[in-house]
Length: 97
Image (tube, rainbow, N blue to C red; front, side):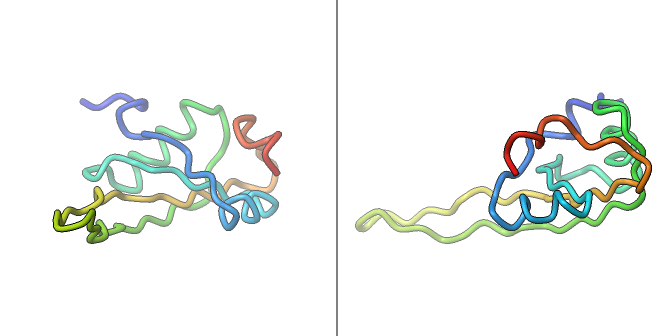
């Protein structure tokens, strides 16, 4: 069985994700094999908040070149987690907005 820390890999900090924090939406990189139920339980366990909904998307790797060498960036799975109105905000994102 996977632990909560195996499911949630890292937060994604971008301009777009920081604007969504105001509406209680947080973006995380998650394990590719994780489903929405596992992601919901992991966020609730790690941060002690109440999750309203989870949206996931698979991000494919981009082709990159360095001179004649061709490679590919890693593919990942993102989860947009929306908290309930009465839930406290996640402290990890507090000072970044």
